[in-house]
Image 1 (cartoon, rainbow, N blue to C red):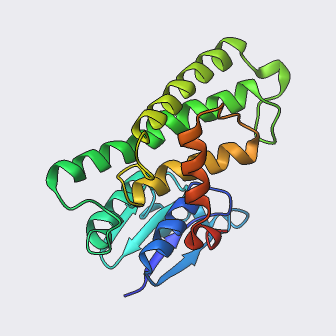
Image 2 (image 1 turned 180 degrees about the vertical axis):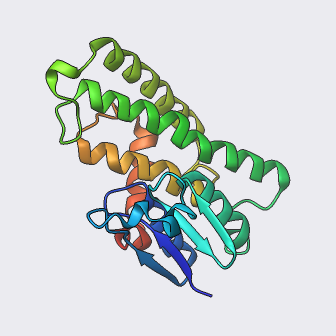
Length: 205
């Protein structure tokens, strides 16, 4: 049975597209039409109760939230392909880093974008908070420092490329597009370039 991925362009669903391409899985990409209210229809709300993306259906299994989808794909399809750790301790660590990319790395980066930058998605100047921008930038820098430390002596977050790299690098893809400065963290910058150079990354659009 074909996997169904519900997503929109330039959304967090793109990281799931990247993961599916890395895994070499057959899937159907569906873009619910917001103008027609397809994302609010009962049939779709049964898949994603908030009517957002991404959502994934694989047989009888329905999932939403990008980090959860990546971890599930890793457990089900990625271990044998070397894209998800095998051992129990390593898999727990991979799950922790994957969730961290959403709850920490992405969350603080986007709050900084909203309040501290002039980007297509930033708040209007009179709606921004300098305090929120400064705090979010400081926490985002802490996240980047954590990545830099993790990558010390490693080409990828778990030594070889995995879906955890997809989770983290896709966040920096968004940041780069919106004009976020990652500083002079050499390990992070080199790692992000390696991730972006992968053929499956080019098929993410």
